Image 1 (cartoon, helix red, strand yellow):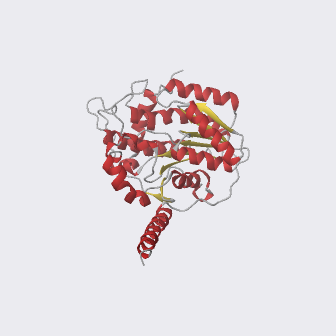
Image 2 (cartoon, rainbow, N blue to C red):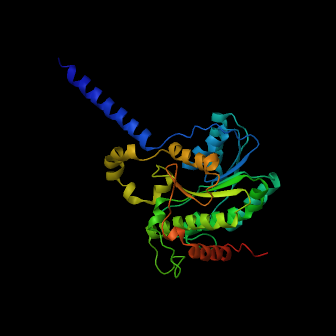
Image 3 (cartoon, rainbow, N blue to C red):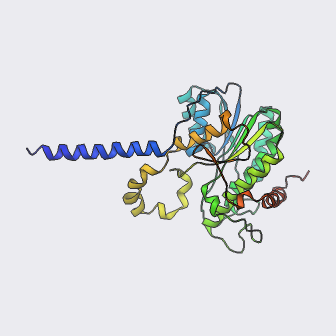
Length: 323
């Protein structure tokens, strides 16, 4: 019975693969199956050409939203836009240049948006960089703080009046569980004296939470709700600077075993949809959301005085109140 061993091996392999897929589906969290339609609703998603942003854009387009893909690379954005249009048959999907490492680019994006639209119902601050080598934005801000926090701080504030006019509306800031390890270095916020990629990343994600908390306070009573979200561990391009995850040993020997426990972008996008759309959290503005549940942010993330200090610094660094 020489044929029996190959059959057994194939059967075992199929079982392992099938079991891994079931584990991945389970750990990836539920699908967001509410059926809200977004006809005549306008959505902006930063970093929408790839990863979580792309799948979020596609899901919004399926619901008939007008989707603005705010991206740095227009060639990549256009390829992604075409794929979304073909998949959803929604022609109201647009590429617009917005480089979050350039405050001039952000300002130009907003100026063009205002010329083309007079409403905005959902703003998803998705784009980000993670644990990159030391570098700076065009204004000289450390890249992770500059893109992950300062860029979105400026973009959001420049769009607040449109969001208020379109209320009820929502803002979703992608943070991370890394914020629990985050510290706002008030003496060296820009990491000029010392730069450590992990600490700078965690600081930027803590800044997202503090920004969300303070913005919720400022928006109370306006009909504009804001949330911070931890999407989970997701297999996207954001890990490209993490050499430990991209060496030969990790990529070909460890990653296959870790695969069931890492979310696909489409799975992570479900939490973004929930946060942007679900009516059950309408009274929970300022919340930190993880795995479809409102969770307590870190002690630093709940520090009201720190949030106010960061807001003032962010206003100064983005020249928000300069006329």
